Image 1 (cartoon, helix red, strand yellow):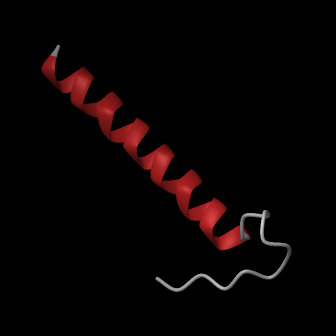
Image 2: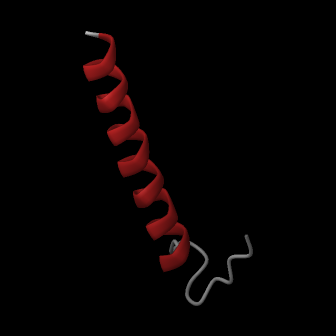
Length: 39
């Protein structure tokens, strides 16, 4: 995945932020399903 920064160096590009957010949500959902399935 190629990320092109479109602002200052310290600023996180929006695609990267969205990717991290989606990854967190998916990981949380998978963990939740795993816990419900085990218990």
